[in-house]
Image (cartoon, rainbow, N blue to C red; front, side, top):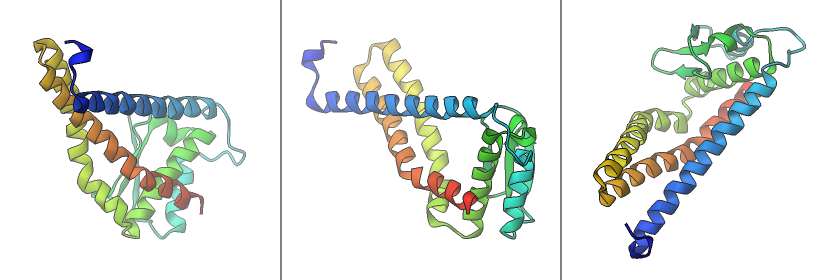
Length: 183
């Protein structure tokens, strides 16, 4: 494959993929490094992530939303179908700024759900497709390299980049969840 023989559209697609990858990896790095930094800083009131989330939920009349401990690190999420906030073991038990912040953020998603926040509803509909597109895109890129099939690589890049664009679209949902948790 000669770089000088690429079509303009192919160069744009590759550029979009590289940009997507840089942004995704950069965001992951920022979240993980911030989490590591504040995972050692204790909160003054000494409450755990579980206690913080429960207080936020109760203050918003969401006593029917359950809090459940799950395995993993940064696997925390709110499940609107089951009305459950799932907190990873460190977030559930620790009394650190990181634990309380993550737990509060997930409680914010429960508040969004309770208030029928439209962008959250849209996110829930689109999320499975986006996750599939990202996974299959990576697989197709890999297959394209194995088969030396440039068009297959391009198709995989398009799928992966589309999932990145979705992530940008739902970013306001994430910011709003944190804002609601702080109110």
